[in-house]
Image (cartoon, rainbow, N blue to C red):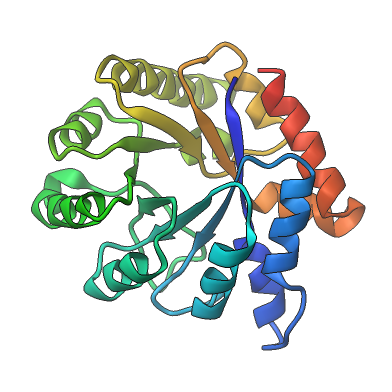
Amino acid sequence: MARLAVNIDHIATIRQARKGTYPDPVAAAVLAELAGADGIVVHLREDRRHIQDRDVRLLRNVIQTKLILEMAATTEMVGIALDIKPDIVTLVPEKREELTTEGGLDLIIHKDGIAETVETLQNNGIPVSIFIDPDLEQIKLAHRINAAMVEIHTGTFCEARSAYKKGQAFEEIVNAVKFAHKLKLGIHAGHGLCYKTIQAFEDLNEIDEFSIGHSIVARAALVGMERAVREMKELVDSL
């Protein structure tokens, strides 16, 4: 059965809109766990646009499931990860002008730097996942640099406007997941997943965990965090 990791970045986005103290992402994480979340995801961006260092430190002490830290492969972020010791680090690309992460890391271009980061973190007991597009060459390189797992980027599928493009994008995801499974990589999936798109993954049992944030936080604004997480958890459990 696949797990659900809840990304709470956009709770912090609302807070930072007025540079205030609420809503508190730590409180959101506790509510998400009470509703059945199997893990909590936060992206500590270099520009600190939403999640702050203090949030990550508090979460490390408070959450009872697991803390997944998304981050760029920079010296600063590696130092923070080694200090805080999240349960998993997910390496993601990062551009300051983007609204959210737009695609996977390109290991063809950045293989050596990413490999060094993976080695440093995993030698210090922190398993590393790499956020990549559903491309077989990227998965092969992730395996070659000894990443413990990959997170397959599902955004192209979720954002496709036509049935043809949606089907094509989903086929790429299926092929990527099957290939990663053959290589014995842990497999996560995320980006753009919502209460409707998650249902397409019903028979893709090789996926260990789904990372979902924006759609849950958006629904939580209307029905509350616990209900929003519980509803998504029920969908994931039914896959």
